[in-house]
Image: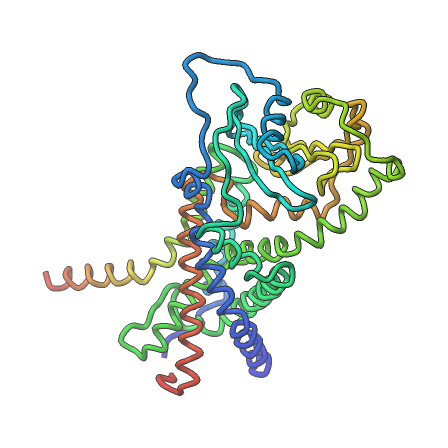
Length: 363
Length: 69
């Protein structure tokens, strides 16, 4: 049983961690709600398309045809990434960019080489929601700040669990004391929704914190392991591309793996004279993980491949667990309902604090 | 004064809900098809649990009408 002084300090921890983070976590829950369905919304708005049905089945055009078409659309930019989607095998996605910045994102039909759509980058209502959710329009410091708020949420959740038992000593699970003070009704709803959504909210909070560290994690990987893979070639001058993309993809191929994306020479995730193909597995779990394969852009030969370090793997696994996009539309709907319940937890907590401050309805 | 509930009684349902949530979060990540379906069921449990007060109200309403009969 908890002694009174211990209980008091846990109450203080719960109160202060919650007070500091609640407004920001409420913002994250509200902006996150439509973001759960970002893919569906993109399709509804026509920003993303499915491959059209062709009158007769066709093979694929050479991937170099697609790359050349993308280059022709933006002759002053470089190809950054060629991406595939294992759920849409008839599509190629090509990102163009200048330096590390992406300037265009095209969807091509892999069978005909036709341009199907261009994704509107950095614009629209969903982009505003995304920025509010990811960095509060403040770049990396904004992201790290939200990560800190997420960490406070995790402490608040742990302290909330400690406080749950003393509050529930005389109450059956899910009791709401209607007919008593409104503060008690809010408290009972807070305790019920809080304890019910605890595990989910903890996982989404924790994976959100890990996602907020994406930039330092990837920076460290680029400066460490990636730089190490490229070290033997760092004194080479920048050479013109020789190998065809078709040849590069063939060299990267591994059994039981498919292409997630191919980073072109000069782009942030490749070398000056080397492609890096990032391959994904074919099971639900391994499809979230990536294996980089270094390919010489002159010879088109694979020269190195290493597993990603644990912190990058943790980041990759954190993404689906935060987004809820790994179990079809029903899982997204469940994610949205749990998100609404999390809003109830936060809002009722806020109401309880306000009522206590005003000194009304104290039990 | 109501009786003080045992630790087991207080924590039985919260632990079950946490276990189901954890199972649901992982099942869809490990297996397609039935893994997805299992995760939908398991992760619906915490949502259903928040309807306990509604269920309680319905049950007591039902009992009252039974007594009146």
